[in-house]
Image (cartoon, rainbow, N blue to C red):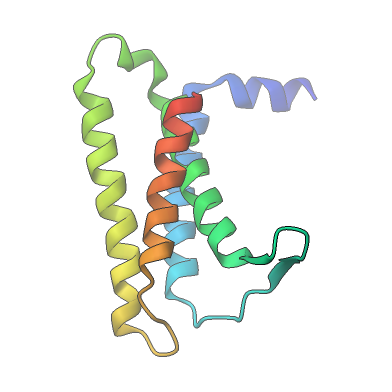
Length: 126
């Protein structure tokens, strides 16, 4: 347990987790689409696509890892936040646009909106 805590307190841990997560998102983006189950909520009269929740979570976690890695630099340079927002939204857009060139994948603007929502939500909460 102590070893795990020491690992999580190191700044470099979040650097590696961030870059691993970037690669993970890219790999998941490139695999053929699997039909995502829907969560049926009859009480509210609509269905929630698990795919949308996953998009939100992927980019929420990406942003969280980045902020944990670079938190000490935010007070010194606000420009790093602006650069991260720009690059992460660009990455979210590119990963979604890749679907235009992959078989069995389609571009979905709602996926992109939820990617960006995950980024912005994590920024607001951290």
